[in-house]
Amino acid sequence: MWIEVPTQPTIAITKWVPSMAPFLLKHLNGDAGSAVTRFLRNKIPQPYEQKDADDFIAHCSEEKLFTSYAIVLLNTSDSNSNGDNNSQNILAAIGSIGLVFNDPTDIEAHVAELGYWLAQEYWGRGIMSAVVGAFIKNFAAPLSISHHRADVPLRKIYAYAAIENKGSCKVLELNGFVQEGLLKQYAWKRGEYHDCAVYAFFFKPVLK
Ligand SMILES: CC(C)(COP(=O)(O)OP(=O)(O)OC[C@H]1O[C@@H](n2cnc3c(N)ncnc32)[C@H](O)[C@@H]1OP(=O)(O)O)[C@@H](O)C(=O)NCCC(=O)NCCS
Image (cartoon, rainbow, N blue to C red; front, side):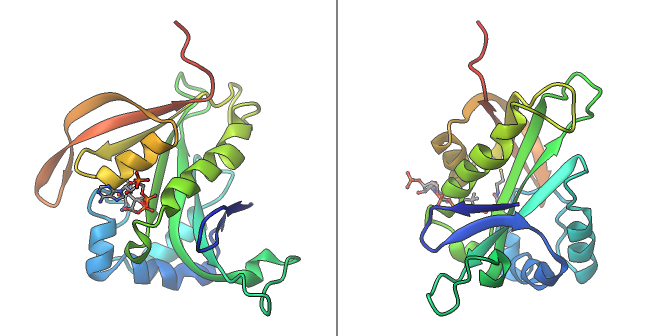
């Protein structure tokens, strides 16, 4: 998969590959890693070790119910640009975006959960707003027509955001997600409870 995102700097969404593991270790450790994972599930442990990165990349398969892609920074200078081989233009992996699908035989097969993170040094430049928009348009929307993981097409994407995570709430709202509810004390992280907003995006308008 290769989705170019209209941002400055130039970003793309593509497959995680083993050579990107050092970027996971860099962005998910130390103070910056602590900031990135402040509201994230504990499946991204702290500290984040080589085995965690290797296992994560090995599990990022399009065939599985959990699918995640790398957000990569591109070198677009003329001397290095090579339109025939996108991967040669990758300077760094700077984040992740993915969907968790439900059991394809069960009643929530048409629903998937969105998750994402961006390396702290790139926050506040409009990158994730653009990445989420491009991911929904190019990756998720085709599944709303034909969903190879289930008999029923993808109809709804949801995301949880701690209400203190203003940036994430805004990213979702800018991309057409609406808040469906508020789950009080839903998350417990680093000794604190967090109320979480549930946001949803529908590929078709809600039936009245
Ligand atoms: C949440 C996160 C993805 C936002 O990414 P980002 O690229 O910095 O977001 P953007 O720059 O696209 O900002 C989107 C909007 O949110 C606003 N925003 C961003 N961070 C904010 C903050 N901390 N407080 C208030 N508003 C914020 C921006 O101003 C922008 O609004 P605008 O377009 O009206 O100016 C990023 O901070 C991150 O990876 N956090 C850690 C992981 C995480 O929390 N993931 C989400 C789990 S639900």
